[in-house]
Every structure is written in structure tokens, then in C-alpha cells.
Amino acid sequence: MRRPLALTAIVAAALLTLAACSTDQVEGDVAASSPTPVATATVAPEPEPTPSATPAALPATIIIGAEATDIVTADGTVLASLNYQSDGDAAVAVLRGLLGEPTSESVEESSHYPRAELTEWDGFTIGVNRPDADFNPRPGPYNPAFQVRASGTMATNGVAIEDVNGNQTGQDFESTADGKPADQVHFDETFGIDSVTLDMPSSFSGAIPDYGLPMTYGVIGFTGRDTGIIEKILAPTDLFSLT
Image (cartoon, rainbow, N blue to C red; front, side):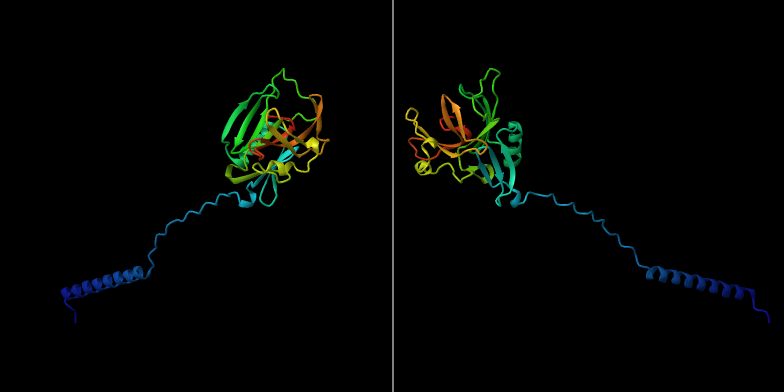
């Protein structure tokens, strides 16, 4: 028996609709079961920390000797040894690197000594000699390219200043001079500035001929008669120097 054509069309349309719904449901289920990608922030690598000077590598003491001044760390490591015969400008550059920028700079004129450019760090001064063309060098084996002077016990950034034997400015002059040979202590009655030898060079006797007399040369401490303490320490210079 033949089915009516209209009924067959209706059944076919219903089957197509059911198939379409089934397909949509499957596709929806697949989409729902698939993980949704999550956007993640790109993390930039952290920059490497900039190395900084450790306390062990920082200058702790300026040690003044008869032939060189050393800059040392707290454990005694020598960061720089500045020989007075070496290049003065290079020595200033080294000190800038270790002590920072100086507190003052000036030029010193003298009729007895070469003109010098002075650079100071709170109580520690380096003077680079700039002799004029007609300057007559002093006799003797020791004509330095530069000199150093301590007028305080602490330099920039808390760096202590002393000589190779531990002498510092501010200590008692008489006790420092006590027991020294007569040629290593000078009492200047004219100017009231007394001096004492603190260290002598090892490369020669430490005595140089000048003004017709042999003069002790090296690290010298000076005092004003009215203070009784070592007010400044110079190197290298002679016992009679008034600089």
C-alpha cells in the first residue's frame, strides 16, 4: 500500500531536523570539552644586579711612608702604592678613584720650592710639583714628582690617615720625639715650628746635603709651639722644612 506523499515529506523533514540538532549538540559538546587557551603575561628576565664594592675592597687607611703612600683595605690589602717619584697626575687620578671627588683644589707658590698643584680630601693633600723652567732643583737624591700632607686623621668617606709607624696628627709631639736621635728632632726658635722625623727612606741614608748641612729627609711631623701636638705630617720632605 502506498503512503501518501504529504506524509512522507513531513517525516523526511522531521528526520532532517533531528539530524541537524544532533550534529549541533555533538559539535557543542566537543567545543565545551576543549580547554580554552588562557593568555599568560610574558615575564621579562630580571636584570643582573650591578656589582658594588664590598667592604673588604674599600679603602680603610692611608699609610704615609718615606718613599710611597699606600692606600689599604681593612684587612691590609694594598689597593694602590703611590711612589713619590712616579707620575703625579696619575697618582691624583688613582686617589680620585679610591677617595671620590676632592674637597678642594688650589695652586701653591713658594720661593724655596717648586710651584705645586694641591688636591685635598678632608685632611689629606697631594701636591704635584710644577717647577718653572728656571727653577733650580734642590741638591740630593730625592726630588719627588709629588708630596703628600696629612692635616687631619680622617679623609673623605672615613678613611684613616697615619704614617707607617702608626703616628697620626693630634698626638703629643714631645712623646713622639722622646728618644729620637738629636739629628731627627728640630726645635725652631725663630718660627716656633718644631719637627720630628717619623720615617726615613730605605733606598738611601735619609740625609741629604742642603744649605751646607746634611738634613734628615723622609716623613716629618710638625707642631706649632703653642699646641704641643703634631699638627701635620709631610712626605717626602726634610726636617727643617716649613711647608
